[in-house]
Image (tube, rainbow, N blue to C red; front, side, top):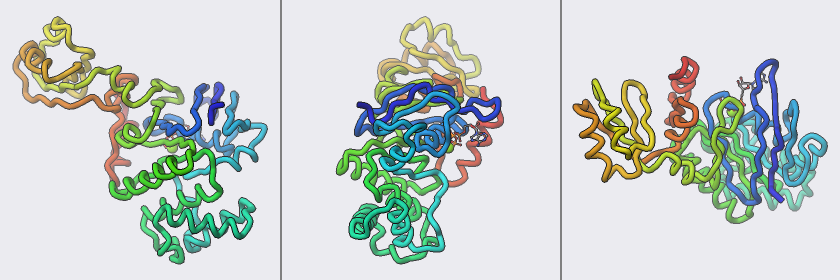
Length: 323
Ligand SMILES: Nc1ncnc2c1ncn2[C@@H]1O[C@H](COP(=O)(O)OP(=O)(O)OP(=O)(O)O)[C@@H](O)[C@H]1O
Ligand SMILES: [Mg+2]
């Protein structure tokens, strides 16, 4: 039995279909990523799977329970770490966890044991009596994670758990999650904008755009669709017909005044491609990334966001239209 099974899961907001009928199975113990730009429908999907938002139509099973007809069973089997922190910042870290255990009716002995375990797991044991208001951003996220894990969920939902954190804190969070997946064999569903995170962590990735899955596979398979390397050239008059005639270009795409040419192996392809293209202003060669995959399927960019600032810039770029 899959850990999660979506069956034509759909959610509309007025005339907008935020999630357009997703069907997909996620296996037990799988590390599954939902990757997509702002407004793709990632959070909406997670809200439905965690029973916090009703689908307009369709349904899903989480841990074998129906999200619409058995929401309480679903809630007991899942842990949630959402985009907006929801810890009470006037309480200490410990108090937040205790409150959570009480909400889940955990018996006091077990509750205290689990609090110690999860605090240890996220490295907050020696800061547990500090007021959350005085925690750093990374510490808050780790506390959220600890709380999401308190009742030993079989499925953990993480909505952008590392958004806005510095690379080191992001690394830490993933270390904890990976350790956990190994130790407890839980299923993880993750949303992120950070493509390299998704690439590195996920067993499979669904690339979503406008409420639809545009691609679904392992990161490696997703990238092989595009071949191996991308040669990006800037040239006043690139000889693209000549490049096509070579028969070694998997894809040729114009982006932003440059041309991206995907080839199996740049080591052998670079020379002939450059020869065919004619005079160039600049050349860049790199391995294909999930960014290229996204571009391939949607014709748009979904840039990796670098810590702070990149967030706003990126949303502006996506809003101000696409090529
Ligand atoms: N409560 C709501 N009322 C109306 N529209 C909504 C509501 N929640 C989400 N939407 C719309 O649904 C679409 C999907 O939003 P959602 O938050 O699921 O996207 P997302 O992929 O999580 O984006 P982000 O990367 O910015 O978190 C967006 O167009 C959003 O404006
Ligand atoms: Mg979201």
